[in-house]
Image (tube, rainbow, N blue to C red; front, side, top):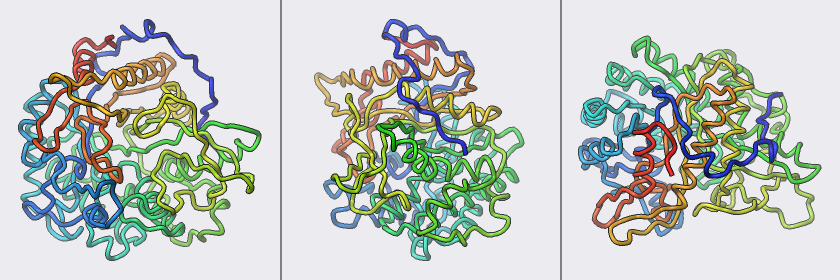
Amino acid sequence: MNTIDTTAGAVAERADDQEVGLTFPPSFVIGSATAAYQIEGAVDADGRGPSIWDTFSAKPGAITNGDTGEIADDHYHRVEADLDLMASLGLDAYRFSISWPRIQASGSGPANERGLDFYSRLVDGLIARGIRPIATLYHWDLPQALEDRGGWTNRETAYRFAEYAEIVGTALGDRVPVWTTLNEPWCSAFLGYGSGAHAPGRTDPDAALRAAHHLNLAHGLAVAALRRVVPADAEVSVTLNFHVLRGADASSPEARRRIDALANRSFTGPMLHGVYPEDLLQDTADVTDWSFVLPGDLEIIHQPLDFLGVNYYSTATVRMWDGVSVRQRADGHKDVGGSPWPGSEHVEFLVQDPPYTAMGWNIAPDGLEELLLSLTREFPALPLMITENGAAFADEIVGGRVRDVARLDYLRRHFAAAHRAIERGVDLRGYLVWSLLDNFEWGYGYTKRFGIVHVDYETQERTVKDSGRWLARLIEGRSIPH
């Protein structure tokens, strides 16, 4: 059994003066990232069909303040100005996601050429400005028509995803050098089908595990589909959100093992080792019999990758619940009643020490360093890229400026942690800050701001925050500024 080694205190904190001036090589990719449903808006424009997030957002009480992605940042209509904004920041790369229902309104059939044209214009605009396009095929916006037939609990969805991957790869593969199949499939499966906090809002533990497997299968099928149609030198990857786990008492090793199996190894096992962890199968035996894993599936899922995308925001402290006290579930995910932890609902997630972001997530740069080192130990031949890292804070424009000191400090400390990991032998290829723009933050609507660029949702005016200006200086000088 391989677990992510995140022993508290394993990495010493550095003083600020040891962080400033750390230098990254010219080949190190520094940029930013977004997701289609969070920024595009235009949900019924040019042949786009409804997604599960359109449906979920319309459900009373599902999203804070009843917000939806109907307009979001109106990026669909403002793409040229947003491209100029990216160029002004000097981004090396921009990671964006492609809206599946914008390409296939019902999740199958011929491509919607108007949808493909939007992403073609986006890619051409990035290239013209010297920005490297990084395309993510799936960032949670499943076509509603597929959900109506079972969504990710239906094996056929994985095959439809492979067809979609081939369509997009054929259309954009001549210009997109880097591809990601799935973004955070743990969230899609366990928050979407287990806890009910994300679309489609289901609360069935068996469905969550089925969805996880079919997402794994979709990844493997999509990698193979992309390899058939994109140039041989194109890079193909997947992005996983790793739960970095720490202990609280003598029961914590068992709690860490269980959550590591569900949150991390349920994806790294089949994708990178070609097998589901035996302890995961045992822990969930009362939930499902895993009969949905068919002969040959693991061989399909276990595809060679060019690098592994790593999303990191915070750590989690766990222990086994004693069955008597009030059970804590401060796992960083919105609690709407269901559990994202099938078979391990009796694990407690404890409230961690401050400081926190506006999401209530603890700030722990050392956790990023520990995670990168652990992944390198387990997968020494696989390069890594930080595909998301960032923080939400309560930003305000004062005198035409957003002085987001807390975010700037957060980024400086996490870039320094990434640098230390490189010094310790991690093959880290890049770092993409989440997010370029303030946007629709899923179940929290527009109440949480992650952007390095402020968005006034009434006027759609963009204002580069101090953190965005700081990132621009970092990219220009290749070293961490004050």
